Length: 332
Image (tube, rainbow, N blue to C red; front, side, top):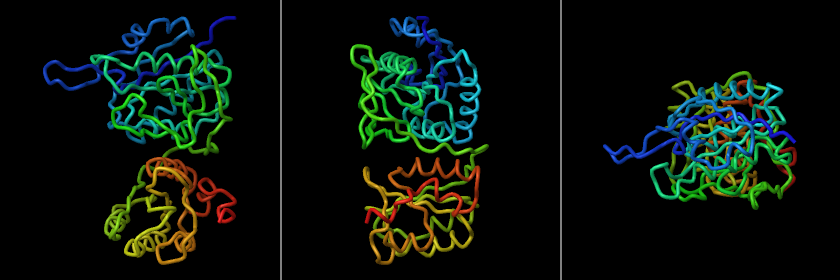
């Protein structure tokens, strides 16, 4: 059997960095070819096409840049000779870019992200192992139809679920639902059924979406500032299963009156928002106000999803079905 063809897009991140001897700090430096040359046996796994798309640190990524990357990925996936695609990316924002692509790419072909937590100048540089895992995943028959994946070490995660959980550990990525697959003696073994969101047929992203996290005593001043600066959507991280301080509510009512969709998520690490409590600022009251419940999404991912949804519709009633499950109230 001939080896499958995998297109590898290098976009930067720590996997491409080394320590600048003058400053002692890590900076982007390596090309895709230089990275691949340090991964022993990688070219035996697949026929590789390498493309140096960008050399960005993760925090320099923007939603507009993600959307341009999505366009390039869609173009590559249309090539019938391409069996899968791997993208190297800075880990700080990898989960957001992976989620945007997962929301907007209908292709059944595997798209696999990877990155690194250590630079090529450090002992135990994890870039080569992660890239090997990503390529092995991209050529795996079991990876088809699973949406965008993230390969870190010897685990494979669903792009719609994975989060960067630790600032610096090699196993920095996790999902509340566990990995989709593990790598055992070079073989990618899937242990869970496919998990991906409904694809949203967006033709653009609307970047004017602000994210606010609430805490004890939070008021609505920042929310009103978002409205004044022209926000097209808001994402609010509440406490528990989706509850807010009462002082936040006047600003939210003003946003809703201005027909700005507001998505509610939780600042907790696991669990989903629910209309459980009936006090002022409780989830039930917030749903009656018209807030959209964001399920188990994190704030950054809910923001990405709202940007994508606003690329199709502007009314909360049209956006709500992409966030809320039909049985939202049935679980109480």
